[in-house]
Amino acid sequence: MVNHTEDINVEITEKKVRSMLHAIKIDKSPGPDGIHLLFLHNTAQEVAGPITLIFKKSLAEGMLPHDWKRANISPVYKKATRNEAGNYRPVCPARVVRWLDHLDAMCSRV
Image 1 (cartoon, rainbow, N blue to C red):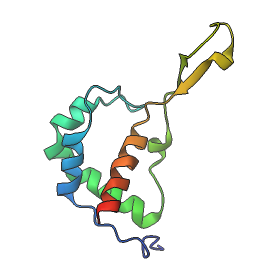
Image 2: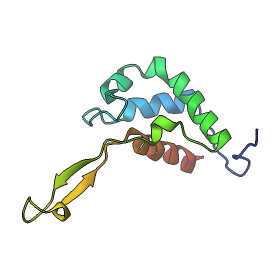
Image 3: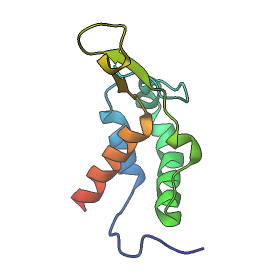
Image 4: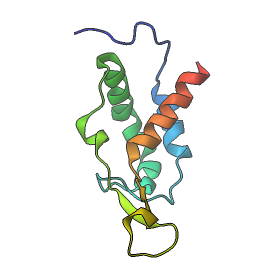
């Protein structure tokens, strides 16, 4: 297995992941997995270890888990007549985007 993180100076710890889970906004909708953010927030102590392992493995392999690439996309009306598709914008409450934002924040603090 090739280590794709040789040039990346990132330390992902269970403590950082737990902190990230406690900081997530619980009023957002669940992703395609159906897991509500309130559940992740409330179980941060228990799930931080496995999520840390997933992050570390993803970085080491240079790949994301397949399910993290899935999203529920909903059309949201933005202007003019509702009969035209161009008057809607796609909204994607994909959890992976939020995870990657937090992971990016962890990386920039190192």
